[in-house]
Length: 177
Image (cartoon, rainbow, N blue to C red; front, top):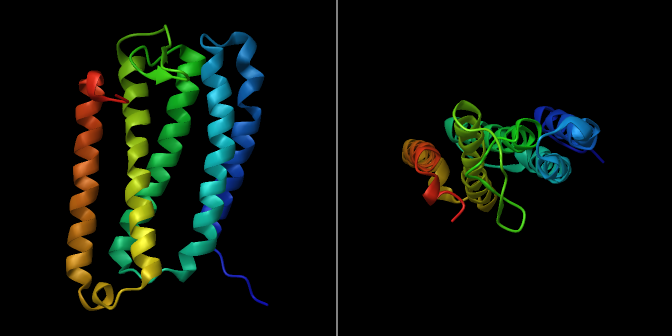
């Protein structure tokens, strides 16, 4: 029996798992220890998402450009989410970002706060990757016949989510409501 998988997603999952497992090592020096606990848990859970996509990627029937958008969305969303959570722990960043039980993490303002908010807000791109994977699994006839339409819709959704992420970053009252 031959098992097909996408090597890039598998390797990313393994790297994220290892980084998630070692994230708490820095905890004695962290400004917000709960952020490192989250980075630990998020690393382990998101590694499973990478593993799932590694398995399903060869099975999807999507236009090439749409697959590129889905790949980009998945990588950016998962890595940005993990790095943003790591920043919360290490730098105490994300003052406006809700962390566990809706408690605000006290910490840095300015650049690190904005960078953390942007990274965590970019995690919503995972929704696009999952939706495109569902479309690819369903293998609708129109997706192959209408590649251009599928590509344009995928690109418009990507741009929309990027704009929403930027809006939420600079208007944190609309982030993680």
